[in-house]
Image (cartoon, rainbow, N blue to C red; front, side):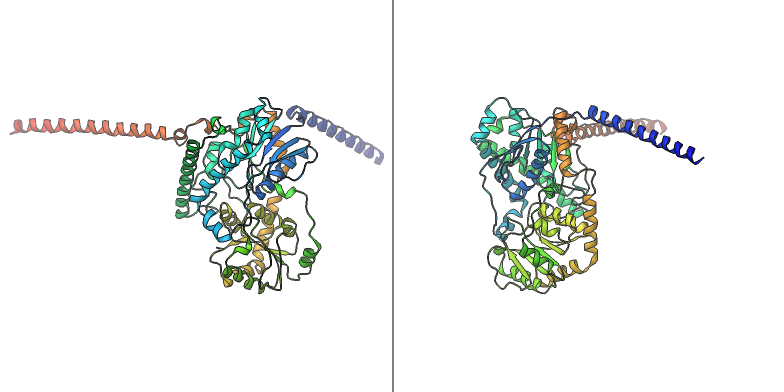
Amino acid sequence: MIYLFSRFAVIVTMNTLFHTMKLLVFYIFIGFISYPPVDALEILAIENIAGKSHWNFMSAVLRSLSDNGHNVTVFTPFPDGNRVNYTEVYIELPSKVLLDAVETLNTFGKSTVMIPLVMNMTRHFCNIVYELGDMREILNSGKSNYDIFITEIASSECSSYVASKLDLPLIYVITSPMVTYIEHTVLGDVSNPATVSHLMANHAVPRKFVQRLSNVVLLGFSLVALIYKEMELKKFDEKPFDLVKPKKPSLVFINTHYITDAPRPMSPSVIQIGGIHLNTPARSIPNDILEFIENSPHGVIYFTFGSVIAMSTLPDHIQNAFKEALAQVPQRVLWKYEGEMKDKPINVMTSKWFPQRDILMHPNVKLFISHGGISGVYEAVDGGVPVLGFPLFYDQPRNIENLVEAGMGISMDLLTVTKEELLKNILDLTNNEKYAKNAKISSERFKDRPMSPAESVVYWTEYVVRHKGAPHLKSHALNLTWYQYFLLDIVVVLLIFVSLVIFITYKVFKIIYFYFLKYSQNIKPKLE
């Protein structure tokens, strides 16, 4: 009996294994039919913004493609060096780093200044890139050996010139959250300002009437200012790229994730790959910094405002507020600071550079004091570290507010900071367990994805080439004029119809009124 049962079990196991193998072969076969392999692609890319954080995102996108066997040629102001399947061409673009803090806030902190400035900068950088000898040779060749073109867009569609000229599928890279005021130009659609905050808004979600009102005003102003500025530049300083019809992108790789950005409608051509730069090879923490961190019994606070702002240019009263507050906390502090610091607290280590990503991943780091740059935000979320934010300009106020919304951060104003308020918020963030708990929850949600950002980049880039530019992903809104998109033609027809109904109704009632008036006048003498 035992023998028969064992034999039966073996037969069942063999049959199950046989059917499993058949299913595996079937799925592999179907996979090859559904997704034919793509040969190594020839990819042309341009980084046309001279910002290191922009390049960190773009280079991570390109690395994911070259590491998967595709050949990448990139024009960049930040050369890292050639490697297998990867070739760089250096472009010299003006770059601003270590700026005066107050001057930067007063200039770039205003949307009325920032939006026209970005348009000027983008077109200027486009002109520099397209005048390069190597680029002119590519543009004048008449025939391209490339399969696809990848570039960043900040405001002007001059970025699409190469794709238009060479008739290549275009992929845009947006290194910030969605740039609200170019969304209609790039994708055809406009986000509803009642639910989606403007890129430069100082709130994560427009819940209050005042927030929705300011959101509408900011969106309207930015759209008009952008269109007017580009029209002005085209009129007085027309460039070769102005004579070519801009190409609409097949895809947009955007530096967002639903953990660090409020939920919003997205076109299928928009692929969220927030945090892709976290896959870049890690650096080891220098021994002196590592010892400083690990020999801190109460943990460490990491403090930086990135590469754009020079911390040493902060007014003395602001620097003193930070020094006095940080001197009273039990934690040690890593403070990114240029030059020698006067009256440096004994628990502070300063340096002009720190391996930020690796520091934020260390379990002994308890707090991140940051300006709210999107790269640092993802590094904090990935490491599960609470954030004390001092947003400066552009997308930073909204980035910090999203962390506040997630319950893992507090936002403060840099120019009005006081020692007392700063110390209170630092102690709250480091002692109240809810912030660390929420940071860990956000980190877990951030990492829980069906595929990594790098895998998404490879899959969707190959998808565009497989499907000849993937025109089916583009919104029909791109085929509409602005008045059609906002239904103004429908509104006009409805207004005309309603007006006609009202007019006809008025006329009918008027006729009836005069008829009865005349009738009553005629019948009255008879009754008398």
